[in-house]
Amino acid sequence: MGKFRFTVTHRDSQTKARTGLLETPHGIVETPVFMPVGTQGTVKGLSQAALEELGVQILLANTYHLYLRPGEQVIREMGGLHSFMSWNRFILTDSGGYQIYSLRTLRKISDEGVEFRSHLDGSPHLLSPERVLEIQTALGSDIMMVLDDCPEFPASRTTVQKAVDRTLLWADRSMRAWERMLSGDGARPPGALFGIVQGGTDLELRRECAKHLAAMEFPGYAMGGLSLGEARPVTYEMVAAAREYLPEEKPRYVMGVGLPEELAHYVAEGVDMMDCVLPTRNGRNGYLFTSQGRLHIRQVRYARDPLPIDETCSCPVCRRYSRAYLRHLFVAGEMLGGILNSCHNIFFYLDTMHRIRQTIAAGGFSRFLSDFSSRLLGEVP
Image 1: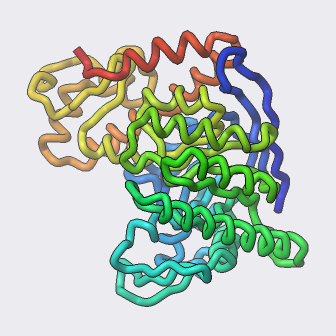
Image 2 (image 1 turned 60 degrees about the horizontal axis):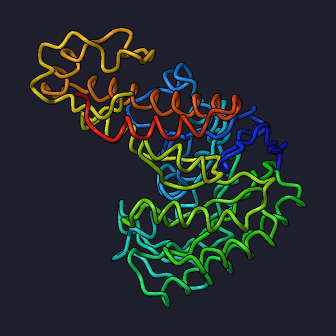
């Protein structure tokens, strides 16, 4: 593993919020941070140059998808994922556990690993905890995730308990494999390894899983299996329950969240890292996030509107284009519409995290939390 260090720089006095610096061979990331999702080595609709202009520090790619296409050997031969996709900043790779979880009719889970058939051509595959780390090391990611067992929602306590037990078994095997890789003489050292807390919506199981993972001393910890349909207050409760047992000096990552108004709430629970497909997915569908709430660009009331998406926004889209033009692009089915909408939404998420970091450092986070969340819940007047 190359240089990996996490340092807490500020703490909020009224919540668990904190700022920090995550140091890796590809630079320093300021936390709390939002990570755009580049599942197949690309953030949909946005070039790497555009992501750099927006200030993206770190993005997420997916092991499952890159393993199936183009394959880790191709990416290894191209110098690793950073070189392959021409991205010299931080990359986190998900293990693919969630994607495999979603292939309910195509996979079989056992303690050995996950047998599944490719959604592309039906070919059979087996991913074990060790194999997942081999693939991620070939990709050359800065942070690698363990293979975990993500239970469905809702699920019985027996089902969730089995998923926790298997997640812990796989985490132990992953840690052992990672340590062997660190002590080896491979040409490509592995990235930092994060454990993943499972437990469904059961507080006791969440705490149990977090406690056991903390004892394994991973460089960082994620909380998975959330935002699958449970009420948002329940999600926050599960995050808080896990956080109680996770080390203060290690980064914490909640996977697959969330809406803009939720980001500050996760930060208030001590979360340092988040990712979600919503900024680009919603952008492609004409749903835009603004400081005054959501804006649905397809609505006819914007057909002659000369204003930008958000008058308080300084993104490249708001500096140049009107709502009328963006609506025209959407109605006409022009791909530029989805690109520009995604660009604005990504900027909005990044700017939100920037302001969160500023308010934590300045001691005003609690007021920001209350004001910001309430403004975003409705639609633009």
